[in-house]
Length: 634
Image 1 (tube, rainbow, N blue to C red):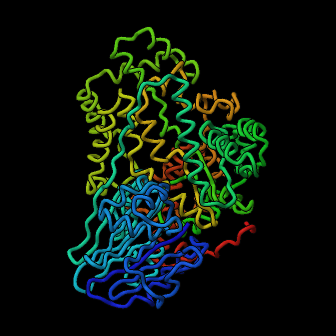
Image 2: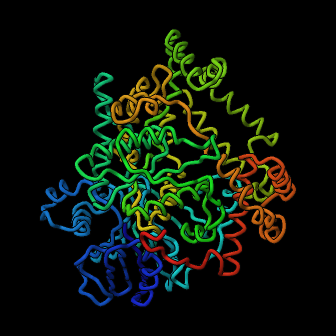
Image 3: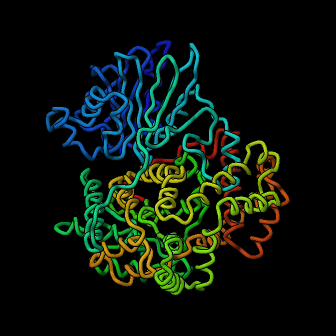
């Protein structure tokens, strides 16, 4: 884990005094040294540089093509050979050599997770790039004009260390937040501060800022293979993804929920670490909230591998207990309602000495449930297979067969234009639009049109396993979640690892035949076969999933009545410009009488927004940096 940042001004200038506060703001991300590169009009820093790296102070000797880098390159050996570099060449030297050879095209040659910046002195260009799925964050600010400048940093708080960078809320971000929608891939909650989208490079020079996508997700070509061979291949690919993330060293841990995704990663880690200490298991348990508790499943996984488990009593957590500190760590607005669970889990992992935390994040999306196969079977006239799969799917998930046919066979069979027309009619009547957002704001930001465009795209790909699979892997929400996890883990001195989102795994799963995703009424069929023997049968074959939204619903009601009371009092002036106040009051009263997930999410977003806006107004609250935790103290 490292932090990078820098400033470039086309008019020249010295940035030695500005770089230090930027680096200090991101000091929690780095465990190594700190290095600076300063030239006329340019200043770069890397927090967490390896020991012995050049450029350890603002006046140190400068390399010809300075690079600051955060992340991991998986194909280093191949690149060193191709670029004729010695085995001991640093990753920064490798990136500089790759750029010298391929210029803009260097990013697509790098496999791994990264964010970096490189100064091309010959062309007078600052080049930046970000990994394919946006696991490593990178934000920037651009002030055009003769006296302007460009600044970038791993986290927005690094930019806020510069007095010239404004802290004004972006109205469109508030609109999306109130509506429960993720921001666009390039947007942040702040005016004039942006994110470099995943799988993009950027060039900055006197002409301005320009960026371009360098990689687009596509299915791998999969040859003829039987079920056993496909399962073995997925096992190999996931194992390689785990090994790549273990290479950096450090004590490994895994977040285990008891679901098949996290259990699969736990099993793969146990395989790789069989000759030494196994991974430390970090798990949330809910003894008093049965609908959220998966203890029986996670205990089966722990016993299967003989691992040590650190249990967090999540049913005792206060969802808003440290909310202002979370807002600081997350740089403001955050949609992840279950962030309080991640805070507790990462804290526990840090106390256990974990330095690299694995998870099964969104493995179901990567492998795909494949329920669209039912519509494909109908179009192909394979009625006997369709009837069997629909019956088994319904029985396994507690649905009626009629519900499965209606949702996954009959509805996709309707022409796309008919489904779109029906959605438009419902939308015109007010259905499908968030009732809590101020109507004028919704109109000004074309919310109805954006919701319809997203719905139209979803309808266009429904009924096709591969098209829907790809559609679910492309939203900006994924990068937002990765950034949130990265920021929270970094605060506790931990590096998150998401093996399912290795491009080698994702592209291969996308190319799989539909029958490998849904078979015998079991979703994610190929994964279940791939982890035979390393995942207990009761977990490998489970079809249900706990409802984590119930945890927030009950705990918010139990612990945060004072915070909720504040919504109707001191928070009202801050919230009223954005919310239909009568609707918010109704949600508040309903929740007080009968806590439910829908109203809970509404009130949680309202409280987060109020705290964020108050912090921006006052310069206090979440704007103040909380003490950095010491390892092993919690």
